[in-house]
Image (cartoon, rainbow, N blue to C red):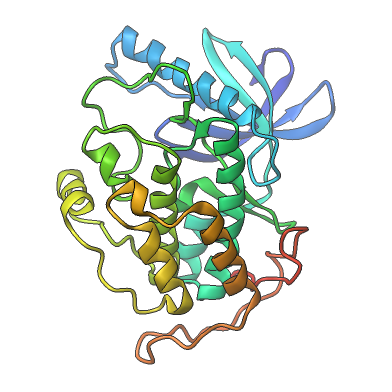
Amino acid sequence: MLIANRYRLLSRLGEGGMGTVWRAHDETLHREVAVKEVRAPAGLRSGDIARMYSRLEREAWAAARIPDRNVVTVHDVVMEDDRPWIVMELIRGQSLADLLRAGGPLTPRHAAHIGAEVLCGLRAAHAAGVEHRDVKPANVLLAEDGRVVLSDFGIAVVEGSTALTMTGEVVGSPEYLPPERALGRPSGPESDLWSLGVMLYTAVEGISPFRQDTALSTLRAVVDGEPPAPNRAGPLAPVIAGLLRKEPAERTPAAEVAEALRNIAHGPDAATTATTAPTSTTATTATTATARTPAAAPAPR
């Protein structure tokens, strides 16, 4: 299939709540790209479909205004069949969610390296007036060249813009949702920091601290519950605790979190609880050092 007489769809890369991502070939510039299409659920009303399309266009707008190597690059937005399609750089690699499914929990050092890179992207987004609002392992891409890339700004809120979501609608993944958004209160950059804390916990423990059997019980745990004490976090434990404070103003500032994550990523792995400490070894292929990380972090196991 040819989109906008230029982008030829080759194979499906993944699917999510907002649609499908394809590997495609740009026949004008002769390069491979990723193309995201929207897939409206059956039975959705026309007004809701229009709102979904607007949300997809907002993803491109939000991501395109963030000039950072840890944020996916948007090349183009085109219309085909009266739907918007977002053309992005093709990230060769896997998501953090894929890595955790295949290899289990990460060491604190490896999780800190990924978290530090994600936080770099978030701080660049916040400086541009953009909240991501859906930070989770599935939206963190681990490139073969060592980059850690934050993707999917489909539900991002840009400073000064009008929210697209309906009153009472929960947008995002409930187990990564900050309590202020679960309660319908205003969000801010600190809300992304909460989600980063949940992601770090999930990376070292293998499961989200707030996951329950239903979305409603998960939201109740986010608002009222305290996360179980992590067993594998080691030096990451105080960082995670500082990010998972219920009140946004009490969360550890981004600059302090960034410094702590860098220190952990560049240091030796501290011993964790003996009965639960991971025992598998690490490879050396997927996380090379970057300009911001002069020492290479452990790669996927």
